[in-house]
Amino acid sequence: MRTAIVHPGADNLRYEIRQIVEVAKAIAAAGQPIRWENIGDPVAKGERPPAWIKEIVGEVARDDLSFAYSPTKGLDETRAYIANERNLEGGIQITAEDILFFNGLGDAISTIYGALHPTARVIGPNPAYPTHSSAEAAHAGLPHITYRLDPQAGWRPDLEDLETKVAANPQIAAILIINPDNPTGFVYPQETLAAIVDIARRYGLFLISDEIYSNLAYAGSGMHKLASVIGEVPAIAMRGISKEFPWPGARCGWIEIYNRDQDADFDRFARSLLETKMLEVCATTLPQRVLPKVMGDPRYYPYLEERVAAYDRRAKRAAEVLSAIPEIAIHPARGAFYMTAVFRHGALNLDQSLPATPSASAIIAPHLSPALDQRFVLHLLANTGICVVPLSTGFNSDLQGFRFTLLEADEAKFEILLTDLAAALRAYLASAASTGNVTRPNVTAA
Image 1 (cartoon, rainbow, N blue to C red):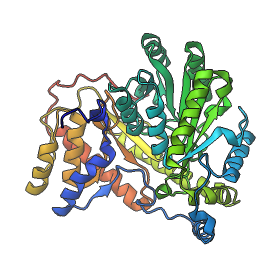
Image 2 (tube, helix red, strand yellow):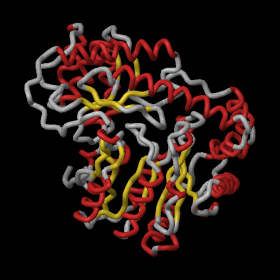
Image 3 (cartoon, rainbow, N blue to C red):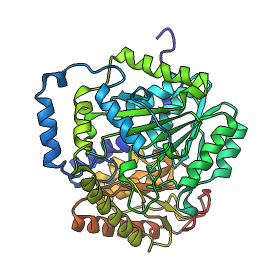
Image 4 (tube, rainbow, N blue to C red):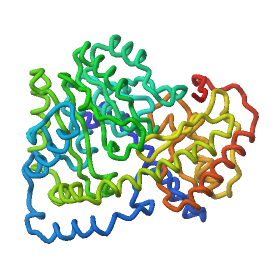
């Protein structure tokens, strides 16, 4: 081309959670059945949306207005329902005018980072969720800036690290929180949220809180939404139905905007999000019309409690099985349906491998990189068909480990999965003595 057409940040767009699928499909074609532990799609993993939710969707779909545009901000009655529910929870009070619908939170994330001033940065957690970290890095054309989630403290944020980086990087305009966290399953205690809000207040920042899993926090986890502690600090909270109903294919998410009247720049930024959405006309109508009927149904929250209890059981069992491996540090998730295992310092080296068929070995060979956890993930895939996501390349982290899901609803199959995963880990770690190649920080269990 006679002029550059590629965005400077294009190389920062990476989503290993799905990119590993192409390798897995090739291995499946070579005869190895795949156990998909990479993508958090409850429906694809066998969870069946309840018949009563399907009935509501079918009933609403029969109304011709479900095929029409919605208002750009979203359906008035749906936004009013969400605002009322939000206000009943306590904390900051909002109105329907503070809510803006998107075609899933991926759309919202892309819009928010795309609307930022080119020099404004958002600092996020490490491990990072790639939709956020890639979009932010692509927006800036620079590596994503992160604060540390501490695996030695059950994945609590390192608040000193966060404030040090905020102070050292005046271009940081916002702090990202993912609560419950993906990929770790950590739930932010209320006092931690309040401390992060205080940092934002003192440095003149706004907050982004991705709360897509907020209604999937486990009993006793201490889950609090940002609205409960936000005070007068400007913020954006992000919610959706993809994981809750579950209906990921609906692509239905929304943002709640807090305290836009406290800062003129933040108010202008919030208006720019609406103006951007106007160019798309609106978000999808059908799931918006369904939302109040499903969430307002007396069967909804008992249904979520059953699902959450199952995730909690699996999280505890996974931690029990994998924590028996000395080279692994792991903490049970307290929300959502993911867990992250971290390799201890020096556990991995370039000489380790697992046996695989010649065809599977040939498939993974071109993809093996210097990233030691990524090498384990590929050998695991070729050997067992278990498809997980490496922490370093998949979640923009300086830690080595992997994320897996808690979505296998068949308890017997989940137990087999854990048994096979633990056996593969032991075999891989024993396949070559440590060479001292690893320069990652030391990780010990809390």
